[in-house]
Figure 1 (cartoon, rainbow, N blue to C red):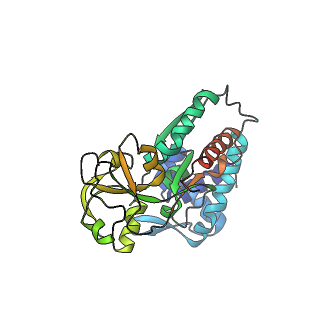
Figure 2: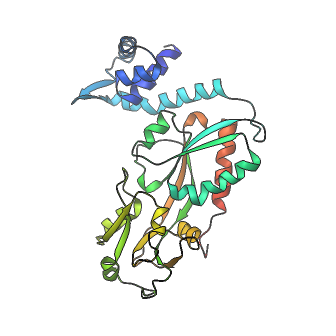
Figure 3: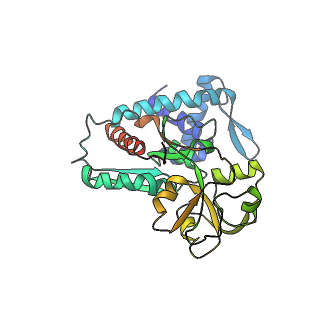
Length: 301
């Protein structure tokens, strides 16, 4: 098996489509079909089998997916690796998939660091979509920062814990009639600003659904950061990450109180493709993000 055939195998297993694998490898569909035929002969296995209108991996194909990705990633990293990275002089562009909550609480601080330590490094921050795993798998993103609570068990990428957060109830600072402690029934009766219309249901809404807590949704937004600013001069309440609430407490004129029920904490984790594990530039950027995350603490931590 030559290297090109190994790359074709990785593309076929990842895309589960001869057409998409051919597009990814920039070859014609007949050439990719020929590669699949050679691979099937080599492994004495179909690798891809018809399932409905699409293709699915055979059991052997499933077992090959991770080791083949690791092998291809190691080869690519070895070929592309530069011996050193000088943040003060080198130019690089990185794409990070993260929520606007992470952008404001953490990555905003990273941008300030890059301005002084690595002026040649450019960041593109993309929102989290339902395809964030594919974006990382297809190397269209360098890093992904997502809650572990939304990661599927088959999401096998190297990663490291960044930070833990919890949820608090927020309201307009002038909403003085709101008691310091509210019951679940009182919460359910209040007009609620929710994070909705997203490809991935947010962790807080999942938790409330699991607990069977009703919400009187008065407004929905696709932005975690926008929700606190919608409460001004209203009787709206919302449940948001405490780190975000503390960050926006002044600008959004917020009142922060305890939620009506104890909610499980949120765990944000940083993931990357295996091919980037040893890359000096990626390692430098990951370390700076990890260092900045360690400076973010909740009150009492």
